[in-house]
Image 1 (cartoon, each protein chain N blue to C red):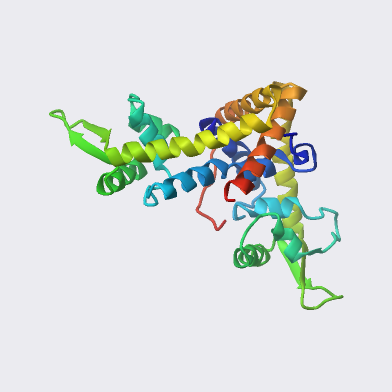
Image 2: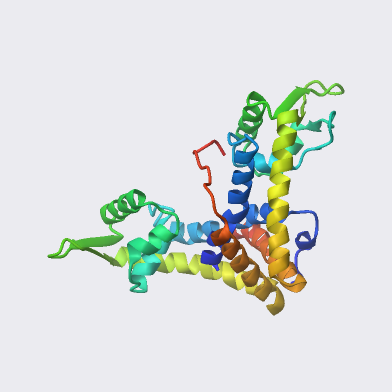
Length: 158
Length: 144
């Protein structure tokens, strides 16, 4: 299928990103809903994926996503209460987490939703466009890291 | 790809927030950035635009769109009046404060665009735009 013409029309990149950013969420929500996981908190996807992949330093990685420690602890509490993960405390008071069967199934549903979007992207874009998309997003990430100074976030109305 | 998207998506927002802070306009709601940026910037008498058109592209509910405009009018970024031709409709335009904020927004966006332009090739930039546009199409069709 040819590239949608809006790519080269008057839409600015931030306008395109505003619309694009909810695509994964919508696709994942469809899969979660089909699997009966509607009570999975929005920010859980990365945590479940890290646990499924046995990633190290999960709290640090979550903090790197901009999720504060207090929010992370609340997220963990919610996921434990809702049966997605288990938490155990070792002799040195260090905490460890593990996926339950429900958590593993929810992670697979999330992965299916994200994979759907990636497959559709691959179907709609040429290899060069896909490479440009990856490169462009990566460069935006690099620019973000290079920007300094405070950013005001006061929970203003959307 | 979702991780790249998550990291990338805040760049413009952060740059715009900083610019607005510098312009004394740190009380602008998030979605208002697109509203102010899309209005006529001419000084001293910018054109009025239909309120319905101004919020249409944001995909907000009618109520949320009206609340957003109300907030911008209250905070003196927009001037609102009845359409002189059809008085059931409302029109809005930038105030002087709104114009300053709109210029700060555009300057911030331009600065990021310029940096991207220095760091990627023209083909890569086309790929970025094509990819973001494709996300939009996928999103619209994923609910079918």
